[in-house]
Image (cartoon, rainbow, N blue to C red; front, side, top):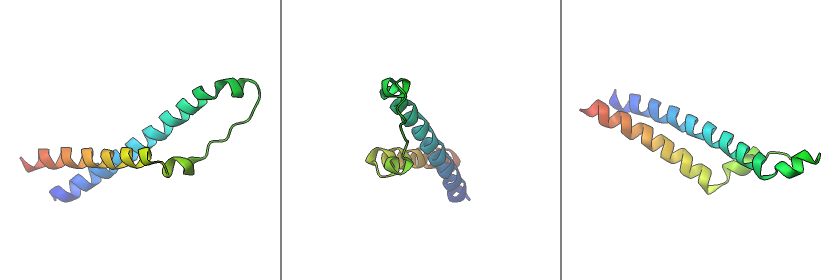
Length: 77
């Protein structure tokens, strides 16, 4: 039961970390190209380019690992 609970919390923290990463990267890119946006140029946001980034996978795996280890250690006591 400890493993199932840890997997569920790890998956939840993975999803939260990915959503947070996408929101922060979207905000950062919109600030980076704010001059182009204000001049009327349309800028597209390609979500698939974030998935192929190594930083995305680092955030996703570390989010899962932190959630899994946190619950596993507290439940094992």
